Amino acid sequence: MAIINYANKEVQFKIVFYGPALCGKTTNLAYIHSQITETNKGELVSLATAADRTLFFDFLPLNAIVIRNFKTKFQLYTVPGQVIYNATRQLVLRSVDAVVFVADSQWDKMEENIESFRNLDENLARQGLSLDTIPYVIQLNKRDMPNVAPIHYLDFILNDRAVCVPSFEASATTGQGVFDTLNTVSRMLLVKFARDAEAAAYVKSQPTPAASPMDGVAAGLRQPQAAR
Amino acid sequence: MQSTPIVTIAAAEKFLKTLEEFLNHSEAFFALIIDRGGTILSQSGRPPDGTDITILAALAAGSFAATRELATRVGESEFNALYQQGSHFHILMNAVDDDTMLVTIFSTQTTVGLVRFYSARTSEQIAIQMQELRADCVDAPLVFTEADLNTASQIFRDTTDKAV
Image (cartoon, rainbow over all chains, first blue to last red; front, side, top):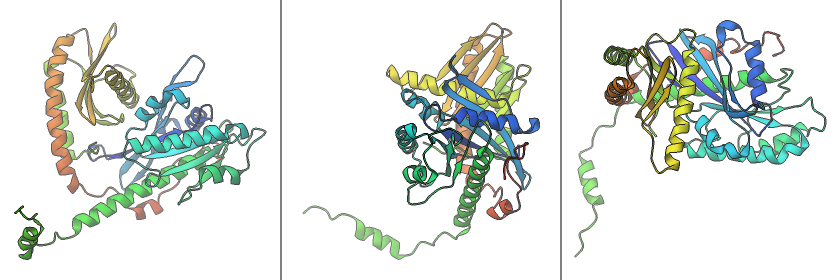
């Protein structure tokens, strides 16, 4: 969850890019890293195999806007997409605040997209989180490739839930849709953070109900009867 | 799982004092308190030149999490400390509680035994401070409201202006 540091006047958030193997999660981070100004980014760290497949995670720290004198910082992570690395995906999802699900638009990747989305749902549930409550967006990547499924079909198989989330056509290699995705999920996250804080402040501001003299009587009535 | 706390100014001062005392006693030169997700809660001392602390924290959390998985595979709930030995610098990571860990960097000027001894004691102190913090942070003021976001500009900008 987000961490507020009043000493440094910072709020830090964690966004995880999730999706099947070779869908372009690392390419998203590489493009973001290449376009953000030096002062607002840290180093892009990739824990990858010799063949450039993500082994553990990629990590990119970013500084974003200042709101009411608080700096907002976002830590972007990717997970390894290969099915065998599920334990690693669970580790990377720890303390996640928002998710970008990167889908591969190519027809022959549909099954992997669905399986990865289902896996995301399961791994969030293991942490007591849910796609119904956590901010997330869907990026339909690789739109520049031949043999891609239509947008409405991808939305039908990945975004057919009670609440449809924003989805973006993208080509991470050229940068198309990458910042739209990032800006939207970041704003959704900030809005949720603000709403949650306002709701908590409202609850705190409400007076605690005074104890009624009848409470003791009611409690007594709730006691189980002794066995005769 | 306990929630990760808000770091109040008072808590930050306590963490800093605890870390400074730890560095003095152990003769280590840098210590970090981080959450298990890799976010920095407090730090003291001077890291090795050119070290990006944010990345250090993320990697330490990942490394410790992986070690925890290893522990469960051999029937342990967790290895509560992890030591990485280098030729000049060494790193010791200690579990503080379910959500927090202590990362210490030290050189050949001190010994792993000394650092390990004081880090265990310091971890216990930090665990108590974290408990106090979790109890206190409910009174922390609002950082910003949804209305403040309406006036905020674009969060990230693509320098090639591809973004709409």
